[in-house]
Length: 292
Image (cartoon, rainbow, N blue to C red; front, side):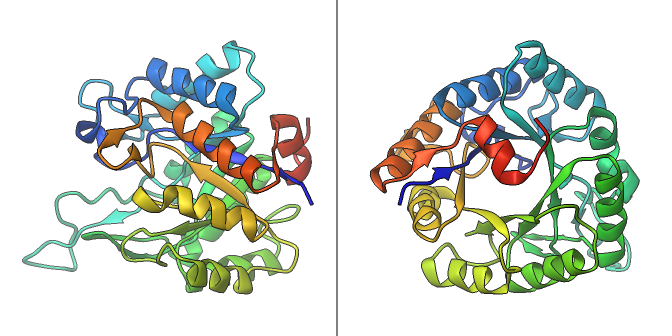
């Protein structure tokens, strides 16, 4: 039976990846332009990080978020805005004294990590329910910090997208939901293929689903070459999907995606080929229980 499937476009990401593709949006103008192009291609939600316009490196400057959001809203777009709160959780130990932080650490307080959400009040913001090895560094989100962030997000009237990268994260998010930290039906994002979380395969996605609360809303994605296979897998299993340059730079082997819109277009093709329809922003709002 056909059903509307929400596409989220993750536009630029928080990794130091701008040098890997000339198509990675860097400036607020470029990121906003990518958001509008992704919406035109079929995305109902755009997931937004910001970057230093001069260096292309990841940033957490509230003025940059303010600029991006203002540009999208000025365009009168109906796309749902999803701001990250993931920045501020990277821990790199000092080699000589692991009890001290080393170069590359970005740890910030929960209040700092959600300041842009409280000011700008997007439709959605991410909440990374995860402490894990993340590539060569650690990604640290302890329960007390998550609870403080979740409380501030709920009081701001923003819906959290609960990012889970492995089984324990899903279990913790479910526990937080049972304790009333999230208003309405929880919205989960199953993140697969990120070293060193759950692998991007069918068994891992099903295992994550088995932990989620009954009736939970969920989306899923895989990174790199697993982006499109996991789009298909999420649709088949009854979920929603995410694509974008944050997670994958290529349309095919050796062919860089010239923006987020072509990745969204490929997701549209997969969704429709599997007999479902692409959710409009209005349908996404209804599915997620957001006010119009």
